[in-house]
Image (cartoon, rainbow, N blue to C red; front, side, top):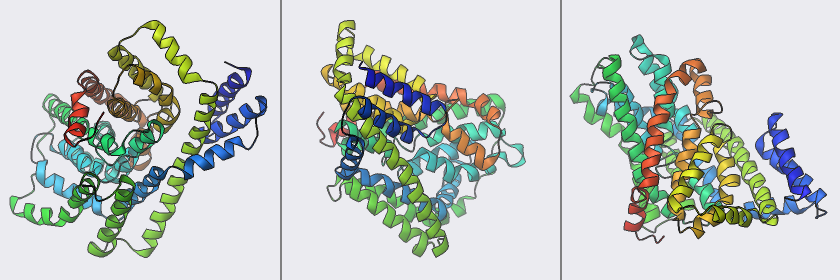
Length: 431
């Protein structure tokens, strides 16, 4: 490594350790790099502007954020939750099942784990805590774990980011996330069933069958959103970015006109919050684009590939090593940073080893979502702590078993690529 690159890495780590937002730390360290390397100081700004404005797919990110925020503010998530209670709430550990099923349905609309946790979290956790039916820590832990399904089943903001750095078809990535997302839901429901039996969680009062049709009709317009999105993308009607715009517009129609649950003042707050969230994500993407330019200038991917070639590892061993590293990094770094900065380092080697980049991308995104609930960084745990007041220590005590079953699901995806690739191949996407 050159002196300039070494100084850049040291400065990045130092600024991050001092608490500077990772996006700003990347930008400042990049400026330090070009200054030490004797390059034009305008390069960081040029790379950021060109990268952000030349990638049409990035537009999907703020649009999905708007759609998720409208659903949370416009009572759509509440209606879906009541439908799920009627559907599976009558079984043992029923509210735990409701939690997972609701997140699977909501996953087809939001594309964000944090949005799912914030939107459904407080309502379902309050339901689970009522009359002491479930321990608060358990209620928060299963909510956090279920929220990780959100960015796996399409649409998915992290997969949009991965598509940006890997030039992989976003349609293929979305299709590749469907079965893994359902697998994650299955293992979480199985874990909840085992916990309910072992810990004696009681049966919840079932919704009378006569009310099920009414609740289904009430939720049906919202349930149409995933179908509309998937038909638009895979039917060739819209691009994924256009589908994000359709999702935001449809959510606005439902909340403001059909359900009449979104006032002009609430819409203003939704748009204001969405702008702030989008700006934050945009800064991270911009910082990552600058940093990726530096990594390319230093020829780091080729050097890394050469080092791995000397180890003579198999594709499976490479996947296991990379995923173990990402699991560790997920305890400390934000998912966006891992996908935009760390993952591009491994893409040339993955290609050289013949690993399908759709398979690689989906398992990496699943891995990063597990990081969202893994202490000490676990950002979803902090979100739930903030909106429910449940102490972090109680959540952390309960979260490990859910992390364990999700890692098991991840291992299945790694060992059996067909879990990821069957649907993209069936839909005509080539590897």
